[in-house]
Figure 1 (cartoon, rainbow, N blue to C red):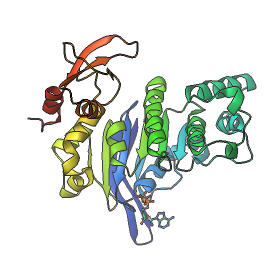
Figure 2: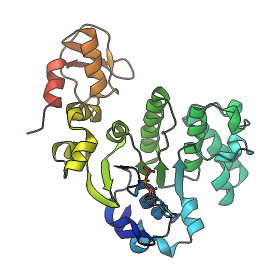
Figure 3: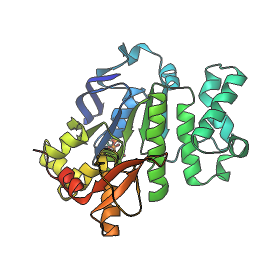
Figure 4: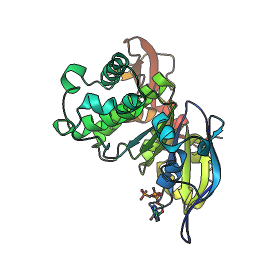
Length: 312
Ligand SMILES: Nc1ncnc2c1ncn2[C@@H]1O[C@H](COP(=O)(O)OP(=O)(O)OP(=O)(O)O)[C@@H](O)[C@H]1O
């Protein structure tokens, strides 16, 4: 758990993070959004003390983060940034092994971890482990960057625009990989993004920052229904609200009993994607199938329309 209490950062007369308080529950994803320069990165970097606060306190699993040496903190908190920050003269395997090596893990354990992570990120360890970063595509480098951040099995992972440089298709894949990995390891994630669609797709909670302050921190549904300020309403895009509601839930959640004809929809896709398939197929209903191909019923236009409507 991360408890942020009245944290403030000033540069001279400029207060860039202003008495922010927020709790990040274990095993959840909190996404920080807001205008450029609102203090998102500064707030996040105070968690692992890459930036020292001017005031306030941050507790990590109950311990004041100032009681832990900075280098120690950064070894135990994963950190992934846009452009991934890989070491160019180290192989992929050596990059991923960076923190475990610093922590003195034995060679066998490190090799097993590198192999596990590369496999998890769908990069063949034999083919990719010995390569150098410049021999990888941007999307592959980005996956290695996240793998490196996860190598020492951190409870906490901080991510600053990790998918910012990726094209939309690879980006969607990277987001789904992250959700799967977060479930697998139970990691607590704080992620900064400019992309509201990404925020709604990933977040258990969204924190909206404006001029150094958190103006609302809430579950995505709650924020859609009750935006705290006009700024929050503008940021989430009022005209997108029904679609954002649908992008939070999966087709499996919206499945109803009954049969339907047509190309089946995968249970794991968002209801927004299910709606798109329904509209494009021109049908009132389509079958839903699980990963094993078993039928889970059907999704209907009428059912999705009810889900997209303002909750009562
Ligand atoms: N080392 C520094 N010295 C002085 N001012 C700084 C420093 N680092 C950040 N700032 C200022 O603090 C403010 C907040 O910066 P920060 O990077 O946290 O914003 P952000 O919300 O992450 O922005 P963006 O979305 O553009 O990345 C900005 O006005 C920035 O210029």
